[in-house]
Length: 246
Image (cartoon, rainbow, N blue to C red; front, side):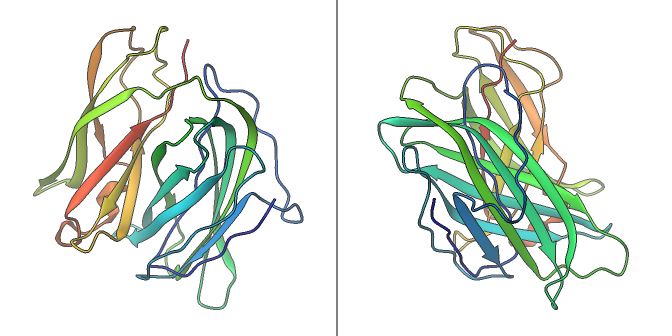
C-alpha cells in the first residue's frame, strides 16, 4: 500500500466499499500503513495518488469549514480508479489538528462500496471544544477488500443547496432504490459542498427516515455538517448514498 499526502483548504477523508449489509469494521492503528493519506489546510487544491493493489480509491478533493457552534463540516471526493474492481469495506479515519499539529478530534467511518470507476461524495461533521482552532485535517483511508465489478450505489438526483434564514444551509435531494433489495435507513448519505472555483469547502451527512423498498424513491435533507459552511461560500453540492441493505 502506498501513502498519499496533500495540502488543501480544511479537509477530511472517507472511503467506500462493499455491497450488501455493512461488514465488521477492522480497526487501524496509527502505525499501520493506510491505502491513502491526506493532510489538508484551508483552501488549496489537493492532489492524489495511491490505493490498494486491486481497487484503488484516491481522494480527489477535500475541504472543511468551522461553524458558529464549534461544528466542523467536512467533505471528501473519493474515486475508485480501478475500472474492473469494486472497493469494499473501506475505513476512513479523520483527524482535526491545530496549528501546532496536535490532534483535536478524530472521526472514524466505514462505507460499504465505491464501485469500479465510481465516485463517492462523502461528508461528515465533528464537534470541537470551545477555544479549539482546527487548522488542518488529516485523513487515513484503508480499502478492506476488492471484488470483481458487480455492485452499484443507489441513484441520487435533484441535489440542490437550500438556505433557510433560521437554520442556515442544508442540502436536499432524492434517492431511488434501483437495487434488488430493501435499502436500509442506516445507509449513509454523504454530501460535498463546492465553491465557485469548484474547490471543496465543506460537507455533511444524513439518513433516510425509514427503509426504502426496491424501485421506490424518497427525499432526503442534509443538515449535519452542511450548516457549518457559510452559504456565501457555496456554489453547488453533490451527494452519494451507500448501498447498505436489509
